Amino acid sequence: MTAAAPSSLLRTLAPPAAIGLPVLALLIVLPQVIGVYQTQLLAYGLVMAVAALGFNLLLGYTGLLSFGHSAYFGLGAYTVAFLARDLGIHSMELYILIGLPVSALVSALLGYVCVRHTRIFFGILTLALSQVLWSLALKLFWVTGGTDGLRVPRPTLLAGTLNFAGSGGYPRFINSYYYYCLAVFVICVIVMWVIVHSPFGKALQAIRDNETRARFLGLRVRRFRWIAFLISGTVTALAGILWVPLNGLTTPEVLYWPFSGEIVFATILGGFRTFAGPLVGGIAFNYIKTYAVASTEYWQLLLGVVLVVMVMTLPSGIVGAVSTLAAKLRRKREA
Amino acid sequence: MALLRTEHLQKQFGNTRACDDVNFVVNQGEFLSLVGSNGAGKTTLVNLISAHLQPDSGQILFEGRDITRASVTERIKAGIARSFQIVNLFDGLSVFDNVALSVFSRDGKATRMAALAERDDAVAGEALEVLEQFGLADKRDTMAAGLAQGERKLLDVAVAYALRPKLLFLDEPTSGVSTRDKAQIMDTVSAVVRAGKVTAVVIEHDMDVVFRYSDRIVMMHEGAMLADGTPDEIRANKDVANILLGAPLSD
Image (cartoon, rainbow over all chains, first blue to last red; front, side):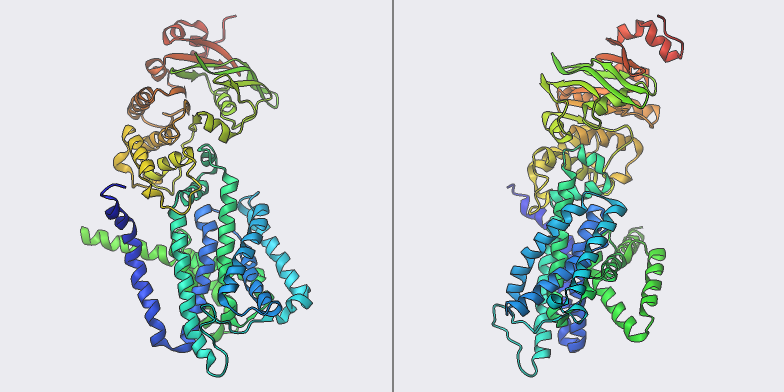
């Protein structure tokens, strides 16, 4: 370690921290101002952001468009539901500790099949596998509850120290659970940020840009894609694990392909070429969808129009457009 | 001493013999040019040696070891690296990252995910050193896509060179650049390669460049080796002159 090391670490961390910390401060303060309903909505947004963050490791960093990420989200959700119903587990920490390895295992198995192909073939395979899980959830109704889904009661947080049973539990739960989601969100963001800036993350981007050359650097391309798939699926599953207690219920909807489309939509909305894109996109998409559903029964049409306009006017997404604008302003000020 | 030797190497595409009984030798430490008209089989030969293609028959020996069936990764580990005719870079990564990734891969560090790439001082130092040798150090933070064509060609070579191979294949390192850039690229490449004591095989069309920089020249024609000698010998070879001028072969 050289004497210059601490300052260079500071240089590495300063730009993301300069944006990340004020946003984090805002996310911490907001629930004190906005009330229970808006807090709950923001928690849903954080969950969607985690799902998109996981998805974007494949799309933005590895160059693989998965059209079946509902499978991993739903996998997390149903794992929690089974743990609650069949094993009587009601601790959020246990949900995560058991749900993560289960999701990682299934992601590894399905990923092993999917990464044998790239481009549209990869997309179709991911879609097909997610449809298998969806139809299982639908048809095995004696296990999964079919279209009725499975109810999940409010879990205890922090190894049982926070309990939300009884009257008035709901607002207390939302308030605490929001911060729980925020903590998991922050951990996911940090972990993913390190991964995409690690040698492994650089190798993924290299494979995305030029598979042949990556091979002639001695990189085992398929293995890298597989590991990326595993991480991606597991992070999106973690979003599913977080989502169930918030929703109180999981139905086959979260395994169905339109939900995969929503994850893709959210990511593109925010901008898949930037690290923050899926985070902003996840939260923004959740608001757009919520208000679109509330304002018109043709909400899907409204979302479709938004997507078309987005792709045509802001192909780099919200974050891409904002950073381009910021760069332009900076140049103007310097000139 | 022969670093690489192919024995009766054969590769056929349909009815075309792209490589016809080729016995190709590369000696330790030399700067060898592989010349010949389009379709002579130069790139096919390099593809076979680098495992981009599998031969129909024949053997490839590297440092006396049979590597005919070795995978791309194994051959890179053994010390064979290559660049491509069309620039093959990681356009979404910085110039620095393009080169650093070679070093990470060579050192078996490319699978690390719990550490920031730019915080690896040993790798960063080596990557910067390579960039300096190739005159690209001041572009380190530029995206590879934002470089001028001449710089892209140099970076393409630098990425392969950073693997620290024993044997480096360069497929037309000066194609598609101006005559002035050509000389600059070749000056840089030959200086770096000679300083690093790396054996280099360069596919090149420009005979002025070939005669100026090579220790030895091998000429291919219709899949077979036609001539092999020092620049002076090749200059004096009538068959070579005829092919270069498009005239028929003397028999």
